[in-house]
Image (cartoon, rainbow, N blue to C red; front, top):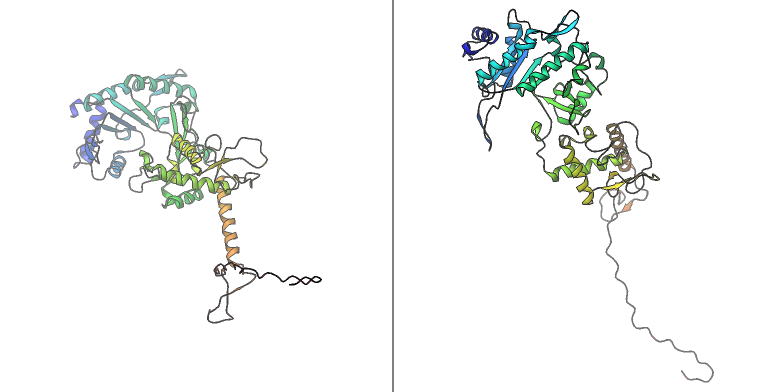
Amino acid sequence: KPHRLPLELKRIARLHSVLHPHTPSLICSYQPRETSGRGKVKAAGATIFITLEDDNTEIHRRVHALDPDGSIRKGPAYVIPALELEGFDPTLVTSKDRKATLTTLGKTGLQKIINHVRADSGFPVSLLILDPAGDFLDVDENDATYVKLLMRQLRKVSYQNSTTIVLLGHVSKANKDNESFFTMRGSSAWIANSRFAISIWPPVESAAKEEAEKFSCDPSQIVFGCLVKANHQGAPVGVKETYIKDAASGRLTLPSPGGNHGNTATDEELMNALVDICGKCAEAGMPFTISGKTGLFENKDDLPPLLRSASKHRLETLGKLAVEKGLLVKGKLTGAQQQPTYLDLANGPIATGRLQTLAKGSRDSALKRFKENAAKAAAAEQSAPLAHPIPVPGVPGGNGFELGTEKPQPAAEKAVPADPVPKKRKNRGNLKR
């Protein structure tokens, strides 16, 4: 209904009709469709995506990649490519008399777009995406004064419309050589004034190959992510996640049985995997604890893929149950004064007092060293000849000897002596026999 759209959306509709006459609209979102055992999925709110980097052609390429069969179109998602709008100025904050000032779009224009989309779609606007964040300023994005004003205004718009606002930005180039932490380019006020911040980046070649071997995929599909900031208690801030990028759509998914919808593995499968990895890590000298600095959830990057997407509560509960059932035991280093907290098998090096110091380096490198040493020991044991060959009667050829295990002989029956014959007493003197 073009007559109900603002001028910007009318222009998009006209451009769309010229460039893509065989598809009905740029507007595309979730259409009700059947799902297995759950009825129909329906849109609960409208989405607005304002992009300053992509044109019409790129947007349609992405839409087709995400939805090749067109099953989720004709819904309330509005994509506004600013590059296609002649004379459109996306600036929200500018400088006037050396002071940070909101533009007309920042003061009222953004709200008008939200109002128009709400009226046209019949849904409240649940999500607003601005890409990239720095381009909505025509001043230095490193200056916190301008960034703070923009964030305050967006917080106000978010509160008035009950809308989640997502800002997409580029990671700082200064972090390219340090994969332990990535932050957003520009002022730290971007993150400081947000409710949460998530960083996503492609790993270096060596890390990509290592992760690809774990999940049997191409290294180009590996993407790392990390929650950099969150305001709610218990958030896994700083925990690195591994995602797999779909080659066709570009969508990121967690490499677990449940994908992004959670882990659907049974507790028995999870517990078996947990007991196995805890035993191996204890043998390698880098044991886990149920919680804390060396806890299961805090170090879930070192867990097998089956366990990585499990929640903190579930991992800790599984660890406690494994101890209660006797599958794992708590131990401490030999001579240590601390309480036993390290998880190990009952016959492991910690439980039996054989481990005095922890291994150095990462848990992954410790496991590799342990596997290499175990392989070398097994190879040496197999190649070592027996000192005394065991003769096996009836073996044809050679000298009648074969290296192997001595055939067990039947147990000899214990001889039971007959009634003893009384000994004759010697004749002493004149006594008769």
